[in-house]
Amino acid sequence: MTANQIVALNGRFIPIEEASVPVLDRGFIFGDGIYEVVPSYGGRLFRWPQHLARLKRSLAKVRIDNPHDDAGWLGLVQELIARHPWPDQFIYLQVTRGVARRDHAFPKGVAPTVFGMASELVPVPAQQREQGVTAVTLPDERWLHCDIKSTSLLGNVLARQAAVDAQALECLMFRDGFLTEGSASNVWMVRHGTMFGPPRDNLILEGIRVRLMDELCQSSAVPLEIRPILREEVLQADELLISSATKEILPVTVLDGRPVGSGRPGPVYQALYKAYQAAKRAV
Ligand code: PDD
Image (cartoon, rainbow, N blue to C red; front, top):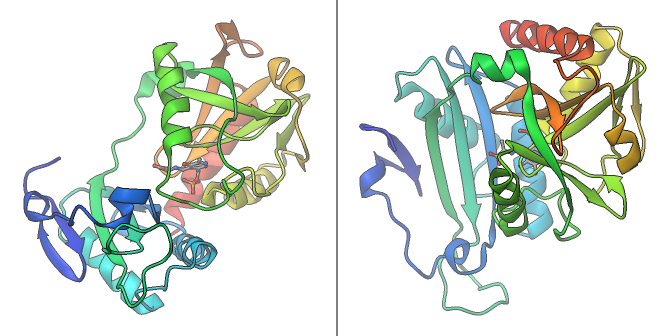
C-alpha cells in the first residue's frame, strides 16, 4: 500500500485506507468474481482493447452483468492513472457478483461490486533480466476453467507458494504430462530456434501477451508453433520464457535446480524482449 493511493470502488474515487467491502460480498465469501491487470506506460494504456475484451469475456463466462459500457471502463481506468504520479502503472480491476445473503446460487437483483486500483509498475530487477530466473515444475492441480481470469486463485496461490518454498520465482505446471502455464504467467519453450507455446484452450489463461508474442515472433522472424508440449521436451529446452503484464517477457534459466540450455538468457529471449520494448514505444 502506498500513501495517497486512490482506488475506485462502486463509482467513487477514495483513499485506499477508506475503501472496504461488506463481509457478505461474494468475492470474499466464494471468490465469486473476475479481474484484469492492465499495464500503462508513460500514461498510455498498453493493449487496452484486448484487456477490455478479455474482461468482458470473463464476465460473460461467469454470468456477471457487465457493470459498465466500454467508455465507462476506459474513463474509470484513465481516471485512476491520472490520479497517480508514477510514469508506468498497472491497473487492477475486479468485479464480483455483489453482496448478498450467503447462498451458492446467484442472488437476484444484486449489483456487482466494482473495484479498481492503480499501482506503480516497478521494472523487473536488472539482475533477473541479465541472469534469468529460477522455476520449478509442478503438477497442475487447478480446475478446468483456467481460461477465465477468476479471482478464485487458490490453485495458483498454492502453486506459487510451492515455487517460493523451493527458492524459485515461478512454477511451470503440467497436466497429464503436458505443459499448461505458470502460477501467474504464460510459458514458452524454444528448441532449435523455434518457439513453442501450448494450445490456447480451457487449461490456460490466454494472456494478452500470448497474441502479442505471435506478433513479436513474426516481426523477429522466430518460427512459432502452437501444440501440446511434453514435460520431457521442456526439460530439454534450449530456452524457456514466461510472459505476463507485470513481468513482460522473462527468461527462465534454472528449472528444478538444473540449467536451461546454456543457463543464460538465450538469443530468442533477447530478440523478443527487444521487440516487446519497441511495441511499448509504439503505443
Ligand atoms: N497474471 N496465466 C495466468 C494464470 C496469469 O495469472 C497471468 C497474468 C497470465 C498472463 O496474462 P497477461 O499476459 O494477460 O498478463 C497467464 C496477472 C499479471 C496477475 O494475476 O497479476
